[in-house]
Length: 306
Image (cartoon, rainbow, N blue to C red; front, side, top):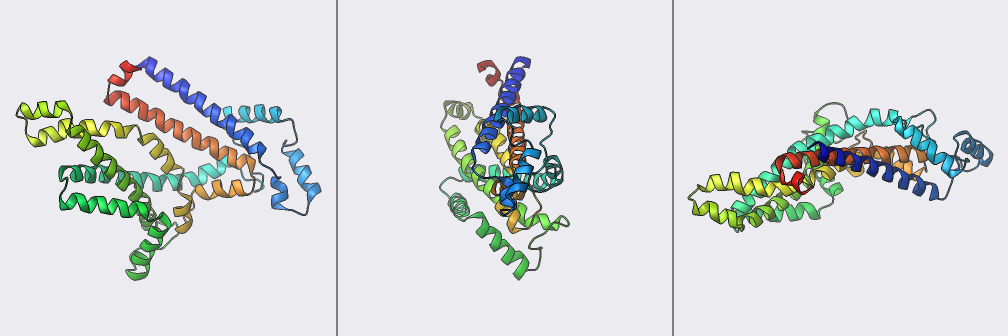
């Protein structure tokens, strides 16, 4: 197990370094000057600011300075928002996005898996067709349409929930519901497909031949083996949710980290963009690292194969 963990840790660190390096040089290839974007008429001051932030230095000097700061988890200061550090933005706004993500995952994953199991168990029945139709419709409708629909129903018509903002728990319900719907539909479809595939395996027929009850076969054989492949997708799913949904955050006026990521790209804010990209990479790699360990614990064959 120690060798498995060490190997995954080395791969994770190399992945973060590769993402940071590629992102750094891609950002430097973008045309334009962030200080001219902020103030198009002041060319002299823009050049002074470029010199002040070291953006006029040789590219490799900038790169090694960037890596040195990264080793100290210092993402630098925003180029377009004076005095605002990237670390401060992450510390202030990431917990908001993380709260929404955790709530959506806690609702979406168990609900989606349960509905997938029920759909497979009632294959060809009314419940199965209803769930399939619902997942198709939910997937086809864009998130911003669902968000507007929820605001219309629960805010305008019923007056149950606020349309937007961030004051207390009630303000998190609608955005959480919008985010969790995508998780529910995805897990429902995947779990149904995997349950049906596992149901055709030889060991399922063997279990039936031994006279085991249907409930025991479903719980200890079908569900247990069907849910294993879904674990591999959890890392990217969790990381994606933790980095937020710009559309949902914008519609519900949620002060999350997604807004800063989009605006930093539009404003050519190199340090903010790079900091958020690397931070997202760390979140993604960490989530996948944890999922790999979880998968190795659940299915020991992974360690043997590795």
